[in-house]
Length: 313
Image (cartoon, rainbow, N blue to C red; front, side):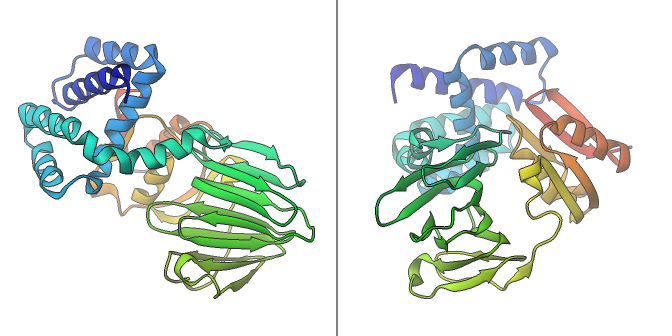
């Protein structure tokens, strides 16, 4: 990291501790907002702190366990925990940086809450969902799209060369198909919208499994799960919507959080509430207002970047 990045990270750690202290005044929230908006390095550092907190498994065991124990014991412990995270950055940085560097160096990428479209050099069309990144390569023998993060919808041109979509979990092969791919920390999901594709897990690449229009599967590096039918929610994100079909509220909020900057939390007591409806991904505040109107929940805002849903009393 540069000195400027280190300074931004140190400031972000301090702000995080203050906002978690439980005694934040309105002027302090406004000061944080001004700091956050002032510099792109500040925003990157803030995202770094959040990502490290969520992915402490990347850090050495003693550091991770000490940090986790400290988070719930007040301001002093929290400051100490964040200091441990900052000191451990040289050890955990490579694992975090590998994802982040690939994102920023990717040929094709989208920001948080964005959907972006490209026409590729072979005539195929690509749409990336929120916070997604991909690399594209085509030569005389093959066409390869490497999905580095997030989700994509590919409408592949029908030509002699197969189009390969590579993810960290395996490969999807297509000629003329339209399909969605999403890769996250657990596995990869493929849903075919038109024509057919073949899927193979990373550790068993010769074992390609065919998938036709209307079908979807999840797979990891070892195995492919059972086929399921697509439904109205499958590709709704490509139209800017999130469709819930009797979905637990916890899952819905986790999905909305992907489309927002900052922190979106849900009281665990509400996680099992079932939700059905269509929610706009281009205006997540409106989606939260709809949930507040229709469910026994209340939206509490510390700032535009720190929102919690709690039971309505």
